[in-house]
Image (cartoon, rainbow over all chains, first blue to last red; front, side):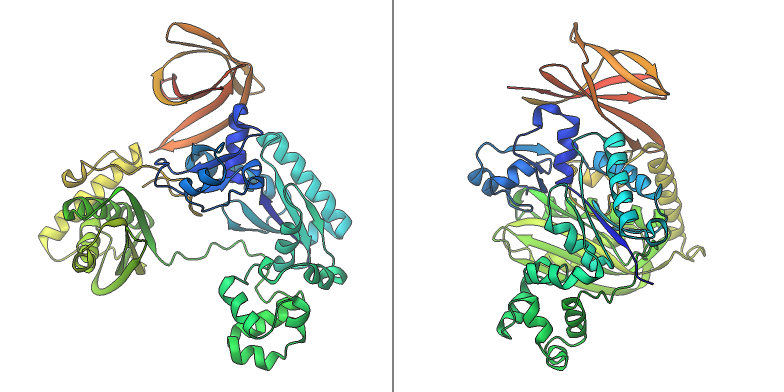
Amino acid sequence: MQRIILHIDMNSYFASVEQQANPFLRGKPIGITGKDQIRSVVATASIEAKKLGVKTAMSTWEAKKICPSLILWPGDPEKYSDIMHRFNAIYREFTPHIEPFSVDESFLDITEEAEDYFGATYIAQMIRSRLKEELGDHITASIGIAPNKLMAKLACETVKPSGLTVVQSDDVIDLLNRCNLTDLCGIGPRIHARLNTLGIKTFQELRAFPLEDLQREFKSYGLWLHEASHGRDLSQGVTSDIQDIKSYGHSYTLPQNTTDPVILKRYLFGLADKVGWRMRRDGVVARRVTAHVRFGNFTNHSEQRTFNEPTADGKNLFEVAWSILRPHLKSDVRLVGLSASLLCQNPSQPSLFKKERNMQSVLCALDTLQHRYGSGVWKRASTLPIEFKPRSSGFHFDHEV
Amino acid sequence: MHEVLNDPIDVTVAFKDNRVFPRAIRWNERDYKIDTVNLVHTAREGQKRMFYFSVSDTTNYFKLKLDPEILEWRLVELYTDG
């Protein structure tokens, strides 16, 4: 049976939410940044800012250089998270088959509800109307309707902002022929460059390229490229299943670059405690820590270490991460981060060692406090001098850190 | 000008259709009449759910925070046009 998939993408999401909240930002070029605007990037540019050349992920100084009238506005992740839950609730009024793709994008399978493309267009308009009613005039969405997720997303991208594009099966080849290779989700700059070296610059050329040669060059991805060039999507349909979390991590851009090991340790320890809290909250422990550092010259170093005794204690995670990073901290550091992976369920069996049992009891009590009163209710003495400012970016918002 | 604040304020509200609408605020011994409620959102602080009202008059944008457990209002953001 031919599926009917909706792809809904909120337009300049964070900026639109701020323009909805604050009428004095409407019609103006604004860029949503982190709390520290000097060392931040533009997480989202408003439609007006995009027209003036400001792009997402551009550094704030570069954005200001391009657009001196740009208003830099600190992001409010809790607000975006709340609005995200509200528009997802609106989608659920129309279908239970919803797959969030990012913080502001979702796929909806409305095959049964719509029955045909006329019905799908009607549902899309109804969703638009409900969004306006619930969230206001300024938080708008672009919608693409097509037989699969890949084509629905591509259709959605073709008319922005606030477009509604319907691409039926017979029209997918025509849509692809009008698009650049990089317009398709899944063809990034590297794949694009490799396709170009094979003499492939358009979807027509990709379709004509022998599948065997594509597979020789791209291995299994060759088949995906071949199918995509025909408007077919090899991914599974819209799935509402939440995928298992593979890792927990945090990174942070420091207020100033530094080589001071005491400052770096404090930030890394604070991040490790955030990671540890989230893992304990979700009842998992980790056997691998990956530590990450970005230097002042924007080079990076990342390294991981696997250990036998699984843990969710921020102190243990910090000690592993610090032992990884310490030998490499010879020049100015801009960002530090760590993640914990190789996860398994937290064993309910208490440790054999009294010291560890005591520490588990302390952490359990601290977690109860944090659950009741929120983040910031406790801090290790060694991390008291530092403060983590909230950021606006990130797919899975997690504010209980 | 954009200011981040945390000042306790008095708020006059209307209740309509099971919703709360701030109508006027008193801050720094001055009264401000609210023209529009632009957006309402919530955020958790531990197990508490705080309500935020983004409201405006002809020249100011105010972000108000309501703690429903103790019925306390605070002005947390102010943006003045121009």
